[in-house]
Image (cartoon, rainbow, N blue to C red; front, side):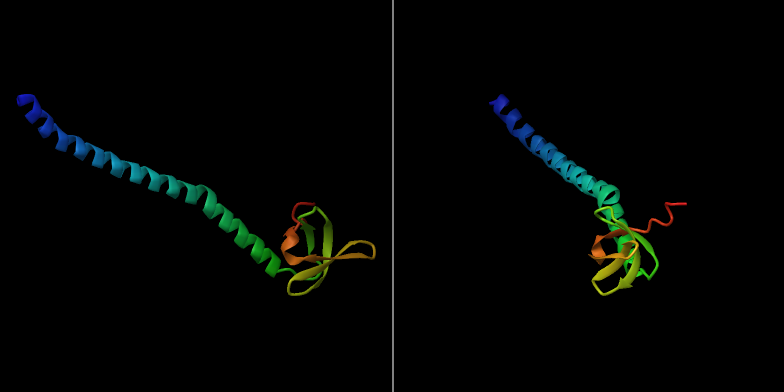
Length: 108
């Protein structure tokens, strides 16, 4: 009978310990999401905003690179497309979203 009473008294203590570890598990999961946000999601959003600002501030004569690696100079800008001059009289119409960066800063 004494052993049975000891087991009954120990059961609530074990239940409290399990509840405490449950909270610590949720805290760890929340910390993982916070770290993921600051190291992965936030920098990606910042880069997307920079690309969007670059595409919206394009003007004739800007030097650009497409996603496919084609270097050119902006000749005409429309709402969703850009006409770029690549070599001599060769011009290509590309989607505005395919323009990656201004390479005039890179080349000196």
